[in-house]
Length: 143
Image (tube, one colour):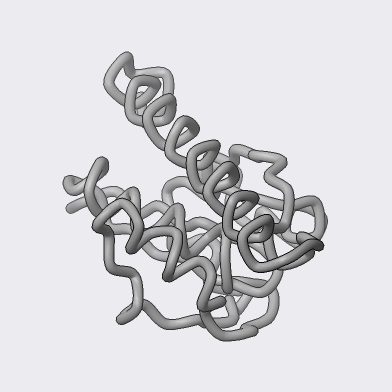
């Protein structure tokens, strides 16, 4: 049975959606899901910034996690402090990693500045995904 990885943030609109999109490419051997402590819908700028690198996340959906379902995942990665604080670990066997990623939905500026900020955060998430893949490969996770 494939290991299950959950990317969790507040609104499941940007960070966790981007992480899910990258993981479906870089971590194909795992069951990948994203969710939020709330569901805000996918941010169009997250879709755009992923389209800019030829990854389509437009068919992904924004969902709210039922906290009682957290124990169904083998690894939970929180991408913000709010999700980390609300991430109730009901099963001690669940691995939890926290990535403190700035919320791109809160970026200020003109459209080009906001998209540039989204791209920086997208690239930061990709770096984390690649590091995660290496950690899994080196049996630092799921050992």
